[in-house]
Image (tube, rainbow, N blue to C red):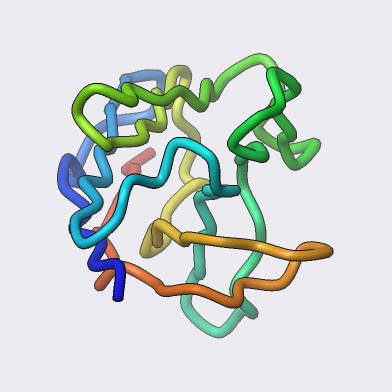
Amino acid sequence: QVQLVESGGGLVQTGESLRLSCAASGRTVSSYAMAWFRQAPGKEREFVAGNRGSDIMIYYTDSVKGRFAFSRDNAKNTVYLQMNSLKPEDTAVYYCAYDLRNGRVIGSWGQGTQVTVSS
């Protein structure tokens, strides 16, 4: 079983940056799809960014394109989400996910990390 631990969330002001980290243990995740999702209060969880393990193509939801960057460090078995030019609408709990098929998470979820952007 793969365990995921997110870190890096916090409270920032509009326009500032944060980098989220998701450290995986229990299995090497380099060949698996990994992604970041987020859930704002009163809303459904939504996909933010991710890629297939063997694919250089990275996918982003439209609202974060040009501001967020997904990356992996296979040596550390860790994925990242660099978030720049943050907006209040980015406020949410951010979750890391392992092993997706057709957009659905069939592996495991992290516990989530809170990101709050003040205006």
